[in-house]
Image: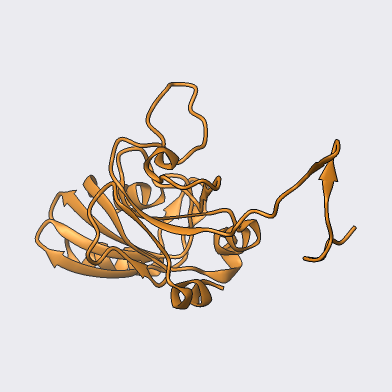
Length: 188
């Protein structure tokens, strides 16, 4: 059954209010999980966002990973952004242990074989002797760490600097901001 904006919806005699759509960019600090409930009692990213509406993380960032994380209550947009078909770029800055070689960079940019299949080609740039920028559009479990392990590098620090068109410029870890209308349109 379709419901239009002019309809009044009730449940057990109580009018159901339409929730305002919210779009939030959080600079996730390490030490937080991206789930709504954690049986181990760890801190959750939703606890950092102080708004009335219930928002959910779009995708995941590992417990020890920091960076750009979108939270929203727009389920249609969240599902679209997480679907691999739309190839939303995610940019990571990775501090590594090991000597970064051009052969490693070439392997990463071609895609590497993981236990759950070959990754899509990545964009890779060496930023320093111990730091690379990696752009991927997949979102597999521990993907960046596993990709780098395959080429002989171990991750010391991992930070997602961009999620699609959303970047962290001017933000501090643990802080969040509402998306602009322009950013919302770009995501849609």
